[in-house]
Structures are given as structure tokens and as C-alpha cells.
Image 1 (cartoon, rainbow, N blue to C red):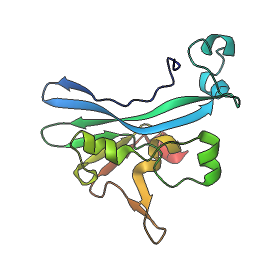
Image 2: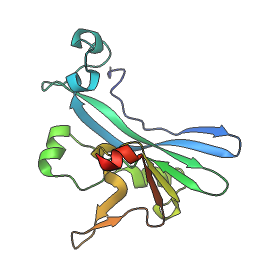
Image 3: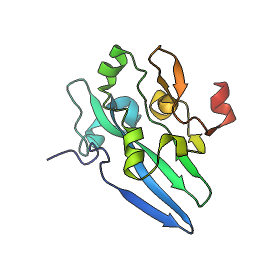
Image 4: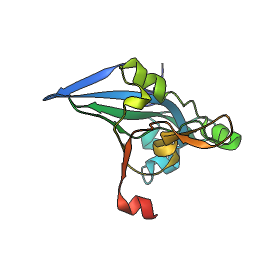
Length: 156
């Protein structure tokens, strides 16, 4: 039986509010240190819900939201993307770079995104803003999007 908290999102969740729809879409999964994830909560409490691996890592889903209004498509967070070093991939056991496909599964293409809202600038939330071109340059995944981030995050 899988841990209660370790399964990444793999289905379709759609909510409606007025003329807007909200879909949860997945970029895959990431493993992080359980101690850093739960902070001051003792391991004896959190491991009843999720079992760490031998390196004390626990799996989290990297999920984003696509909000569709009659006039625009708004993406909240972009996942980790594909620009990770081998060491980072191994450390975090990244199983990502799936957001573009997840968006297509709900009928949205990257070029359809009008606004990207980044909740913060950690790589697992903002790394998917760009991808590497064949020549190794970072190019936008959402070419016509305007980006929104909190000013405090931008300056940190």
C-alpha cells in the first residue's frame, strides 16, 4: 500500500467558479528531505502518514493550476522543467518535466498561456518557465505569457 501522502497527482480534477475553470495539472514528483519538509514536527508524527526512504527523503507531487477564464489562460507555477544537473536529479529523484503534456491533457497548449503566476522562485515552482534549446540556450516555454511574481521574491 502506498503512503497516504506520497502519490503524485495523476488524474483530472476540475473545479468551476462562475465562468472560470480550474484544473490541477502535474509536472511529476520530487523527493525532499523529510526533516526540512516538516520542520519542527517530529519524525515520529509525520512518518505515520508517509514513510521516508533510506536517505530520509519523501515524495511530493509537483502540481500546478491552470485557471481558464473566458478571456485568458492563467498558469500558477511551472514545475521544475528540464534544466537540472545530474546531481540535482539524483538528489531529488526528479520525475518531472511533464507539465506541457499535463496541460495538453486538459486541452491547453503552451502558446495558449496568457499569464504565469509564480508563487515563489524555488526551482520546483519556477524551473519550467524556460527550456533548453538545441543550442543550449534557455528559451521561454510560454512565449506570449506575462509573468507575475511577488516583488520580495524577485529581489531575494
